[in-house]
Image (cartoon, rainbow, N blue to C red; front, side, top):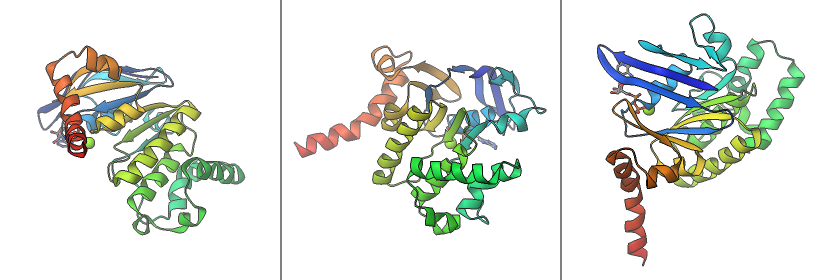
Amino acid sequence: MIRLKDISKSFDGNEVIHDLSLEVPQGKTVVLIGPSGCGKSTLLRLMVGLLWPDRGNISLFRENLTKNNVEILRQQVGFVLQDGGLFPHMTALQNIRLMADFLNHDHDATNNRITELHELTHIPKELLKRYPSELSGGQVQRIALMRALMLDPQILFLDEPLGALDPLNRVSLQDEMKTIFNQLGKTVVLVTHDMGEAASLADLIVIMKDGYLLQYDTLSTLSTDPADPFVTEFINAQRKPWQQLEDQIK
Ligand SMILES: Nc1ncnc2c1ncn2[C@@H]1O[C@H](COP(=O)(O)OP(=O)(O)O)[C@@H](O)[C@H]1O
Ligand SMILES: [Mg+2]
């Protein structure tokens, strides 16, 4: 569904993605994880054509991503950026409808779709009149998810969609997303730095460090058969606070 072949990307002569190849199978959720600054967001932006690689190529739906087809291909995917990326001068509803209206979709069909999305994301209808600044972080993220799902895309790209949430909201939206991905059979690429989130949502996990892909595997293989000491270090570092907490409770 998504294929990256030997991708490199530099900013100001400084290479931040090195020769990276990755294939995302249809219907799977792939989580990109790694320390801050390792290149996760850059990789996601390359996949939706918001940035262009210096070398290598990217294909979506078996089609090479180019400047000529990027607009068309991007209309077939949904994405949520790290802060939700809603337009502040538009209400939640205007944000959600934006692309459907731009593409002249049937008004009734669009309204029906919005009702469906309400049921899926558990957002009360009256919130849709509000501007993003009048919504909580969790509500903004749910609206951003509704916007991403509006055109029923086969592929979803999500950059730390739960990043700004408190732990309770985080867990509830995480569970909802899991249901949504499974119910709709979407192909999903999700960025996080949280191993618990990766464990809960991912079919496959990409561990990145300093712009390199260290390992691409299931969680159980990452823990039983790590390709690099950093893989184990990263997984254990995230386990440690929990162990300490459990020890204290005992
Ligand atoms: N627009 C940019 N200009 C210059 N450097 C950038 C830009 N975007 C990202 N970088 C750099 O690229 C590296 C990877 O960043 P990013 O992909 O945002 O990491 P992550 O999402 O994993 O935290 C970092 O060193 C960051 O400073
Ligand atoms: Mg990032």
